[in-house]
Length: 336
Image 1: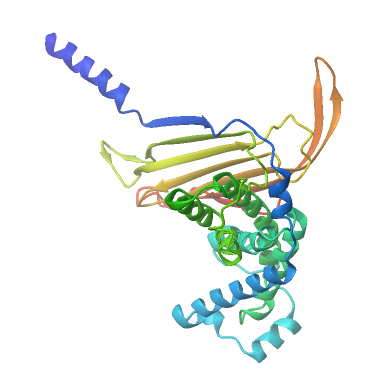
Image 2: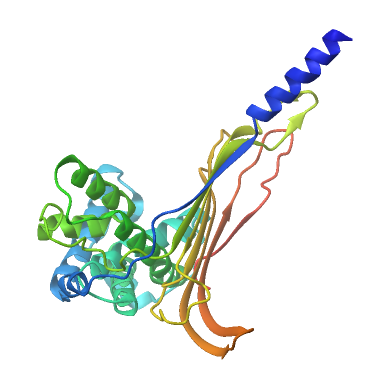
C-alpha cells in the first residue's frame, strides 16, 4: 500500500513539473504614440535607392542559383528572355513550400526595400510587384508563372508589413555599443532588407535623441508556448511521431479602435515551428491584417465597426512514418 501511494505521489509530481506544454503571455510595453520627428526623418521617399536595391537583390540571388547551386532554371540569355516575353504567363507546379511561402518571403524582401525608404504600404507593394515581374520575365529560363506573380507581391505585402512593424519594435536609435548592435542585428534578422537599408544609410549606428520608431509603441501582446508533440504511437513504443513544437501568437494594435486606419495598424500573427524528424520546421503560419476600418455604431452600450482584412494562411505537414504512409494535409492561401 505504501509503495502504491509513493508511486501515485511520484506520478502526480512528475505530471505537475513535466507538462507537455507551457505558455508565456506577455504585453511588450505600455502603448505610446510615435514621435513626429521620427516619422518625418524616416518618411523621405527614395525611389532610385529602393529600385536599385531590388535590382541588386535579384542579381545576387540569380548569381547564387547560377554559379553556386548551378540550377537549370538560372541559365539565361537573350534567347530565354525573348521566349519568356513572347510566350506569356503559365501556371507552374513547383512545391508548395516554394510557391506559397518562399515566393511571398521573397516579395517581403522587395517590399521592405521600399518600405524602409519612406514608401507606404500600397506603394511598397508596387515595388514587390516590379521585383517579381523582373524575376519572372528575365531571371529564369522557364515561362513566367501566373501563381508566382500573384503570390509574391500580395503575400509579400502581408509578410513584409508584419516583419517591418516587428523590426520597428526592437529598434532604438538612442542606444549605443553592444546594446545597439544587438537590436540592429535582431532587426536585420527579422527584416533583412530593412536592416540592409539602415546599414547603407548609416542609420544602423547613427545616434539620435529619439527612438526612430515609426509606430511608437503600439498595444502588443505576445504568447509563446512550447512542449512535446506526439503524432503517432505504435503499440507501446513511440514511433517517429515524437518531437518538439513551439507556437508564437502575436496580437498587434487594438481591434476595437477605428482611430488608426492605416493598413496593419491591427493584425494577428500565429505560427507553429517544429523540431521533428518527420515534419517540416514551419507547419503553420496565419496572418490577419486589417486594411481599412470604419465605425458603424458607437453608443454607451454597443460598438460596431466594419473592416476589410488581408489573410495569409499556410499549413504544411509530411508523412508521419511508415505506419501512417500518407501526408495528412498541405494547404495555403497567400493571397486572400
